[in-house]
Length: 200
Image: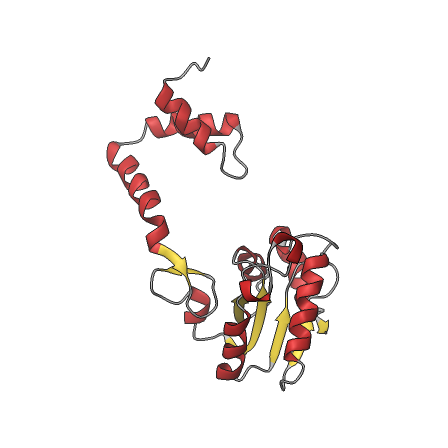
């Protein structure tokens, strides 16, 4: 039986579902929130409630963005618009940005080919990638896909699809652990992989 009122126990239970938050951490957060001023709690509640409406996806690349706007990367005037780094998920953009090496644009595929899990070509944002390549006159595509079986299959498919276009197709250099998700790679590893990228 919980030592806390039912409402507080429910909050603790919800907080434990967040990544990296265990039972003790959830308790500390919930108890700290009890000491907040009502206005601060109301502000947090509003932010959480409106999050799905206020934070959506960039209409150009698929990165996180304020509703109805481009993401900060697509808005930035100093980015190299002739290079697009293709990633599986928007969470991987932050990992690459932390390397402070890459200055081009991104394109979020929305996953990778995995027929056994029901993810096929039509489920990925490939058509919009092809459209951007033509519109922006892209000269290089970097396939920054995880080096697991599905990531390799997706990279091979994209490479064959882009063969007829006048652009260079590269992949991140090995140095990223085989079979890993690049979302969890540190900035130095990502930077080294970008510097040592090779033609696909």
